[in-house]
Length: 266
Ligand SMILES: Nc1ncnc2c1ncn2[C@@H]1O[C@H](COP(=O)(O)OP(=O)(O)O)[C@@H](O)[C@H]1O
Ligand SMILES: [Mg+2]
Image 1 (cartoon, rainbow, N blue to C red):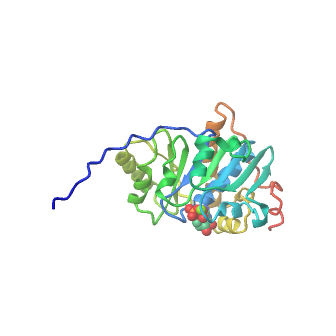
Image 2 (cartoon, rainbow, N blue to C red):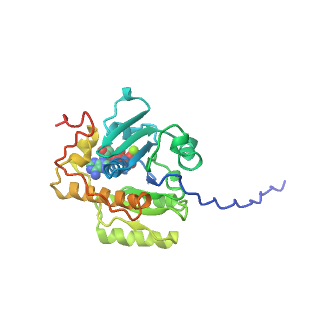
Image 3 (tube, rainbow, N blue to C red):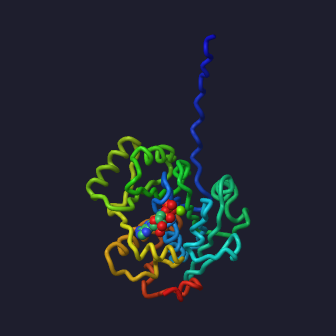
């Protein structure tokens, strides 16, 4: 019997939508690449800058909630105040994310009004495939180039990609590797030049639900990490408030009692 071969009709290219509210997506191919570690302080920084920020945590653990010191008893949506801005965190997945971002918007989904959304995605290829966003793609040392390319190959052309390296790598190698990825993907990629090193202090802050913005800025790795977050948040700000000056970062000494619970941690 001859086999019947299907002749595949190629799909229409997906339309290039833009989110209803400017959006930052933090994604990686694999878990443990520092997505939540970046998504939370980026969202906080934008709130510090005076925006109403919606942080959507899309993995089943919803650990972004915990990192913000939100307790289980606090309900599905929790809001923190950061000076003039607010950060609202909620666990949300699947099609609903698409509804919030592209179809209905947070308001019509009953979440409230926001100036910016930040998405902490689960580790998967799809994390990188949302159109019209600022995509912060995190990579750690164990990540194969193939994995990253698999994820970024699906990134629509109207999304901006910034590659971030967590863990030690020679900056020249990193630059070279990103150049190779640009060649393969045939699109420009931004990349953060310095590797973000894991530090005990940041780890401890994460584990205790304490904001890394309250950490003392001594020590090169912590300062580098905060500078990176500052850069990404500013890139996002330019999408929400183009032509408006970027507000100065919170002082480290402001052990900001903006979140109840954090100020008695240490
Ligand atoms: N810069 C950092 N310094 C120290 N620990 C970090 C840093 N970034 C991430 N981590 C830790 O690494 C682990 C994985 O990070 P996480 O953000 O949860 O990854 P993902 O969300 O991609 O799964 C967590 O235990 C986190 O506390
Ligand atoms: Mg995570």
